Length: 178
Image 1 (cartoon, rainbow, N blue to C red):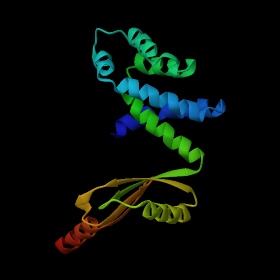
Image 2: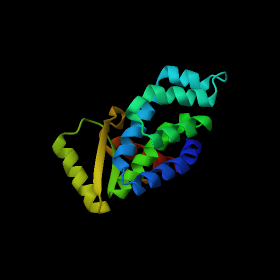
Image 3: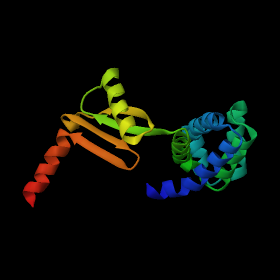
């Protein structure tokens, strides 16, 4: 996993710089998301893995399938990825690009895992508390994991806050074993 992130980082940073210089972060975000959808297509993945299909052929096919959804620069970027055998890294490039874009806008992503579904009010209250803590706007994404038994786990950047019952029980079990 770390290897893919390491490979994707220079690509994501280069695209982010290009998008920022041309004041087109939103446009690049849309184009990269579309390219990711095309790359995720099972037929496209099969062709990308086929050693008989030349990189330039695959690049031309990719661009013809994409039509006007990719601009010239985005098309060149995708062709570069294909010719370097890096099209499989595109999802990670998109993820890192979106993280750079959010950080530029002062927005942090918070991944919240809850034992139960959270109401809109609960999410808003949690986001407000996180915004106070980090002094930044927070975009919270909530998923439900019933194995937590109760409580929540919040991941913001490299920081993880485990306030789940499962986490507390694991902590107690570890303490008892020592």
